[in-house]
Length: 453
Ligand code: UDX
Image (cartoon, rainbow, N blue to C red; front, side):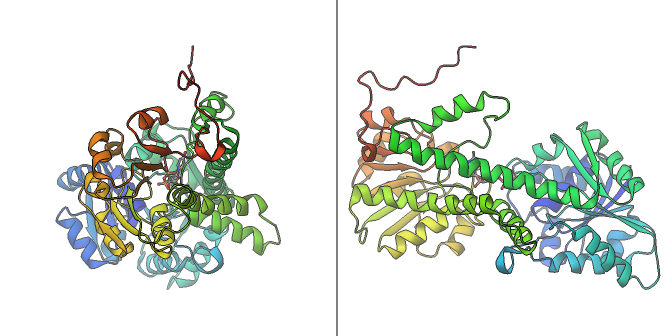
């Protein structure tokens, strides 16, 4: 059993602390927000993440996990301290490192024995060296420490699964002994461990997220071309994904990516390149395509309802940036609602989980308690987040409730012919057949992709 401190009890810190406790370690998790710590002591979590409340409660009850606002308490017995604070997007896309600085300074001021300081927050390349300088300069007297980069690869909504079943653990340090100490901490996860230097580990994180975002913008560009040529991007993705060099994941076309990571990390990587005199043309294209996907949904509404959307009522199904989370940071729904509001349309919206955040972040949207309430009197429904509960709605009831039976499927969760059979005018993203391309459905319906093996 090792003794671990975690600084920052948000999406990454709480998952990291709870999972390391569940692996049998003693974890003290610290946050400077007193209310957050008091709530955690009462079992109230600051975030929605499936399974997290159970694993936190289990480990608090077992005495392996506790919460504090005191660095003295957090570091008292710690061998490792994970920095898991936020690194929000700052000016010109540069990551804002004020919280990392504050954590490093507090650790340096408080530590009274040697520590391995582990950067888990997503930080620009070179931050590990910067943290080392801060700790060394802040210590009142020299105390041995090492810095290790250990980037996270957790997806919101599946963070526990991703932590306990990583594809790989990436570690970077100038102190290989420290790196191997941290590697031992991760051995129970039984995944490949990549040990490299600080800057390379930091770049692996950015390059990974930027590549995943690139994959999404790539399939969205293909979707837009499919639409013009009458091909179905969902079936293109199946055909592509069977190539092991490509893989099926992150080839789902739609209204584009959001969340607290991809937008911020791609911008930060672009910024890093730019300040070094490099020109991130591909990353810029990834950002541009992603922004355009939001507009595509509104263009389809204009195609079907007329250019002037003023006075029209549009229903938004799903507001969180993705399913199984309440997080609305950079959510496509926010941009889409804003464009519609500026066009004079009235928006109604529903999300199974993120309504509290939606009330704050989407003041112009009338929030409803169910998809059916959203559909009432709507000129069109737009699927923005692919929650499972939207996949089996009573479409007769939806049809009857709507003023016009128009569905824009921003995540391609429905099958076109089924929607047509229900009497809807249906538009997906890149589904090929839609009116704009004038491509007619084959008389016998879609052939679909059959995988023989
Ligand atoms: C991402 C990375 O996956 C994770 O490794 C990293 O540590 C943090 O950032 P997250 O942002 O939580 O995780 O969610 P993810 O499932 O990656 O989805 C990101 C966005 O891409 C969502 O808005 C999602 O809707 C969108 N997306 C994802 C697509 O539009 N198409 C896809 O095929 C996959």
